[in-house]
Image (cartoon, rainbow, N blue to C red):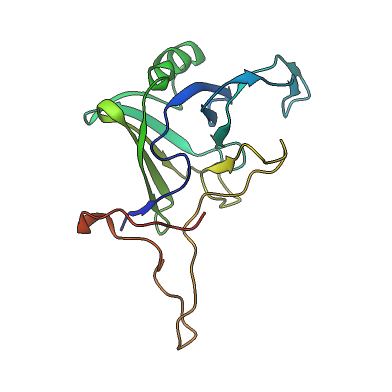
Length: 179
């Protein structure tokens, strides 16, 4: 069952999106500043990218993803770089309206304005079983990216509570989940 995550980026517009690899996405939110050049996993120097006040990334999990509009798939992580980059740019200026997480099947849906959905699933290459997305805030160090995940708490019987700060999708309510 999908559960909503309610964090500081929900309700914000995407300012910039980029990828270093097909499965490694960076979505920047808020006012942009020029970032620092970086070195990719192959040791190759890469040019600086714009950096938002907030950002989410899939750099640790490398999930497979699909971008769709109104249920129609437009592009996925298996497409060519040119096709991926061109289609992902449609997210710029779109508001992130909901984040759904399904921890059992390891999938996440990012819902944007105008019916755009970025869906992620854990592929065969994701052996580390990390949460799909990590978050960096305006006051965070550039290397501090805590995971976006549903937290589990123990109840009085010492058993896991089912994400107490989240509301199941089918209730029509959006809960506030810890991040």
